[in-house]
Length: 193
Image (cartoon, rainbow, N blue to C red):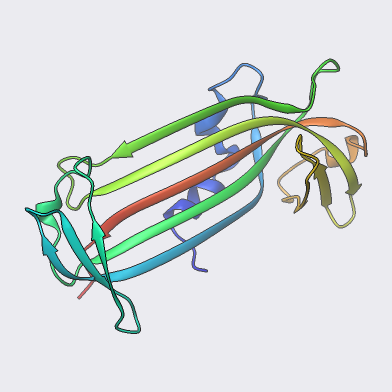
């Protein structure tokens, strides 16, 4: 795994870009855990009329990719360019207990897709943000490990970032609001020479 621009988004204080979307979200969300996976392949050939790009991986294997008409500026992609897919997932928690009458479950979902038009190379980024009320199953303030029980009953264990203050105020059984961010960026870049 390597750090990327998307990782920087999740390291930013509180994932603030998404917190204003829903009234039930706390004013400030702080990241607990983030994972970014970056996959790359080299463009072997481009057929703009048929909207087909042939990609080659590090082992020399090739794969054909049909490019949707919604992808802008395909004519800017050239042999030797790098096709990049970055997939990031993050979980953040607000230091606000959920309302006493809040039931576990999803309280809001927001999806945003950004497609580059007129940029140096085509790209598209999709971000899904989900707010949910979950229950703290276990909490260890010394190791900063918290286990949440999701609305589905699934358990999620996370290491709480030291930037999260007030962790000692929470206990097992408390309901809190968490934010899940799933971000996928797909694009082409010119390799550095």
